[in-house]
Length: 196
Image (cartoon, rainbow, N blue to C red; front, side, top):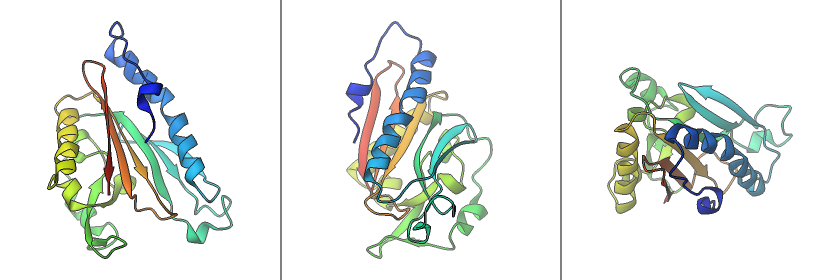
């Protein structure tokens, strides 16, 4: 996990929007540095916006990016933005169609189609979906309850700066961990690391 206390210290004289904008501009560089360090391939990271959230995405399968593209799966590096009311109800049929019926982890356990940024925070589908352990996604464990509490905090206050950074141990798109963070109204940064 990044040492966020070295990257950020609260200044109570600043406005929330100014602090959040600073985090949005400063956090991507260290996220990318750590991602590049852990990669055994040459990443092809693109940045794009979907439904108000910025995504850093490793599009390694682009033939021009790597001769090893066949062994390396495209995957999210980080997503960040501001929570908002969902623009519409969840697209259940699109979720069902995502990679077929069900997903399984490397150990054969079934996993949920989780959201890096939850639907209740305004998160979308497609690039925002990933294989997530049910106990984390549904709050069935102590870490899961913390994760869900963080999501509820951001959802309950639209405009909250929130981010998710998947952590990988190989070249696959299924993260083994997740860094999840948000900026609280008192300008304290709340970051947790979860196993997946």
